[in-house]
Length: 308
Image (cartoon, rainbow, N blue to C red; front, side):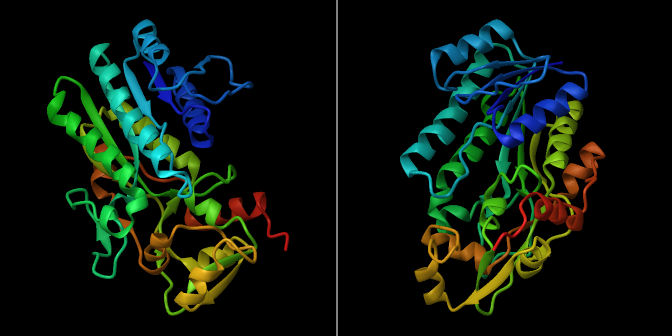
């Protein structure tokens, strides 16, 4: 099949593109960033997804499937930039797809859609409402993009829509929210809290996306991987030192002393787990992860050793 991947030049986008090529698909990409060493068989168009030239790519390429990965997940990005790219870009992708006869759109979302809180269930299922807007307003744009993508299920019924809510990634690229949080030699924690963190290797993400295309899934699906791991274990296994701090000291220390920068609302995600149930996706596709939690953490540790 001819597959168009938005955000193809990103770390995960490249891995997905390579996996699709290996699976026998013809791959075309759209991204504002360049990919100068893109492999043979991958055609990359360096354009803004919200621009007329991007729609021209849809018109001329006529993809059968679109995988939308062009979203900003970096928590310190300016909110206006995030809304413009995440919600505006998602709307553009669905509009182009609908106008130009795309058969299947896969929206790659995040499990943080569900939000973190003391009263949240341990395992979130796909039918639960988003709490991230309340508990973590910085994620409101990603929640809005997820909901907009899901609305295509009834607004554009002739087109198959798949919404994937994928856990954190951890692997050799060092890309992603969790990987960035672990980049320094010390990992801050809030005293008295050790939440479960759920993540999967980037290669498993790519395989899951390809499986959703092959199965032509319709609907909303959680995608997880290995069992969740306490944050302190993640820190130690990746070669870092967990540093428990009282909450007032945690707030004051963020962005200083080699600790990562985080928006204030992110503290809920350092206190409470966001764990999802992906049984429906596994049943629908037969997919299973290939990289366990220990291997994913070791791969990250070996690629990004603690140099302190």
